[in-house]
Each structure stands twice: as C-alpha cells, then as structure tokens.
Length: 380
Image 1 (cartoon, rainbow, N blue to C red):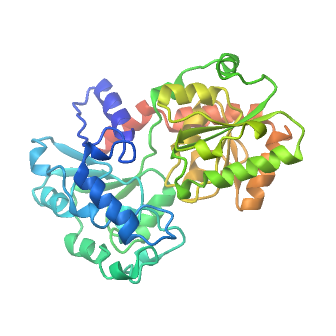
Image 2: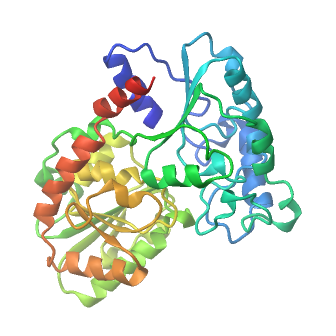
C-alpha cells in the first residue's frame, strides 16, 4: 500500500516510477499466489518460531529471491520496501556492489534483527541475537544476524535506509547490523481516500448506527493476529458496556473476526475492507483504538486522524508518533490506563470534537501522500 501510494504520487510529480510486486493480496487469503514463499512462511511460523511468539519470524523465507535485481532494468534508483521472500540479501549486495543507488524503506525490524519482525522487549539485536527467545531450540544457531554481518562487511555510500518512525530509526542505529549506515525518517503516506470529506450522518445511516452512539473502531489486516491484540481491545470495550448505560458501538474491520461479533454488546464485525470502504466506516466513528503489542508505525491511526477521528492507543513501538499526545488522541502506558481512557471517552468526559479537529490537521499535514512523495524525491 505504501509503495503503491508513493508511485502514484511520484508519477504525478513528474518522476518515472514503476512498481514491482509478486503478491497482490496476502498469503492468508491467497496462499497459491506464490507457493514457494507460502511454504517457507509456514515453516517459519509453525516450525521455526516457538509457540509463544506473537510476531512474524523469517528464516527460510529470507532464502527465497522471487525477484532478481539484475532483472529490474537499468532504473537509476532501486527502492525496496518489503523484501522477505522477494530479494535475498546476497542479491541486494550485488546491486550495491554494482554501484546502483538503493533506498530501503524498513517497515518492521526484520532487516536488523536475527529474523524476528518485531523484537518486543528483546534487545539482542544490539549485540549478536544469540539464544533467540523467539525460535525453537533446534533453530537457535541458525538465526541470520551473523550472516547479515558477513553480507554487509562495510558501509555502502549508495545505500540509504528509511524508517517510518523515529522509534524505528533509534532501533536501527542501536543495532549491531546497521549502526553505521545512513538512516533517515520519512513517515508512511496515507491513501487519498482518507483525505476526502465523508459525511458522518450518511456514514452512520448506511451502517444503521444511531446518531447519539459513541462509536469505537479497531482495524487489523488479520483480527486473529495475536500481536494486534484485538482480543484485548474487545475486552476493554466490554468493560465499558458493563459499567455504563450510554449507547456505545464497537466496529471491527479486518479478516477473521467472526468470533468477536456480539450483538448483545453491540460489537460488530464488518469484514475486510479496502481504503474507500474503510474511510467511510472511519467517518462514522468517534474514536479509533489500538491495543497492539507490535507496531512499527500504525497507519490506521494516521488514516482515521485524517478523517478527524482521534485515537486511544497502547504505547507500543512507533504508534505514539501517529498522533499528538493529549491533543489528537490519548496514549495509555498500561492495560489499566487503556481501559480507563475508553471509559472516559465512552462517558463523553473527553473533548472528542476538539481532539478530532487536531487529529485532522496533524494527520493531513504530516502524512499527506504528496508531501511524503516530495520528501522521497529529495532523498533520491
């Protein structure tokens, strides 16, 4: 989504850009889109990663290079986004050794860890990732940070790493892998759909939501992903419903949310949506929630912010950079504080309207796709 949005707006600014992808949706919905990568992902998830892991882990997936850099023509700049299964580290080095200009936007921690896409509280990526807590005993000697060190024996002046948040930039600079490399922070852009003005009443009428209801929204690509902790968000909302007599609604958007539906408590699962439909649902909402335990950025907060919807988030990774604390949203430092903030919002004891105005101004300026595209062009 980020790469597609950038390409569209770079073209609008006169840059000749093209997008190379190998999977149009995701492996959960379309496992046959690339069977080899799907097989490697299954081995990584159910064989390599231990049962308590709440994040992705790439070991065998990193050994697959579905796209070869030598087949990408003579483009003056190669801009990589997600490379797991797409470009091998060896092929990335070949591109650098040939002198090609490379920009690599990091969307999670995998490039500078031993293979985990989010390290949570582990800091081993700052040294050598020995005895990795996220993999089974059989694979502890196979994690790849040592291999990455061998593959990047020196600093390449033609490589620039980009992170979407200062939180991730700090992680890159602290890592044993990329601490000496050029790193800049450029936020991810939101899609144009979230810059349109949707009518709140019309959006609510379409969903059959009463005008006086306080509407909360939670979004995840896969609502069953334990790292997104939708279960924790639902439990917090249930506490609000039990403790208050006000009219509340929780809308859930994403795949695999059947088990969360609860008509009695007014919890509604709307399924997976594209940007246009999500923007309309966002316009019907008062608050967007995130209790995720692993967020490199958290674009839903920025997208809803652009619609004028403030956020309540659990402080995790770079998500706090998606809003202005206490101005365009609320940041909880604990599970208890997260529940408390939802209770206050549900009781209308927080100035949602003012926060929404601040969220709209902040998100539309900081995450504007044209503004982000211009920043990348300057970097090129």
